[in-house]
Length: 90
Image (cartoon, rainbow, N blue to C red):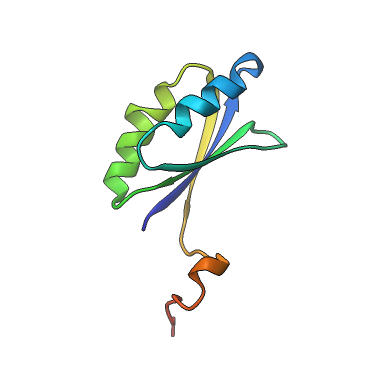
């Protein structure tokens, strides 16, 4: 399943409220408060890249309090829960 990881810089006065609003969005599976250059990390899993694009541009990035963002896509999961579901590459 396509997975996007969105890193967000948030207005410091709005971090908790913004995180809670984002967590209520469809297909958002996790929101983390993180250290470093960004304040929140959002994990978004959707059945298609088109839906990821729609959620990010039409919902997530319109959330009040977001100052900056960076989106990366996961190619493969090495999660222990998904062990045994690997794809062999020649």
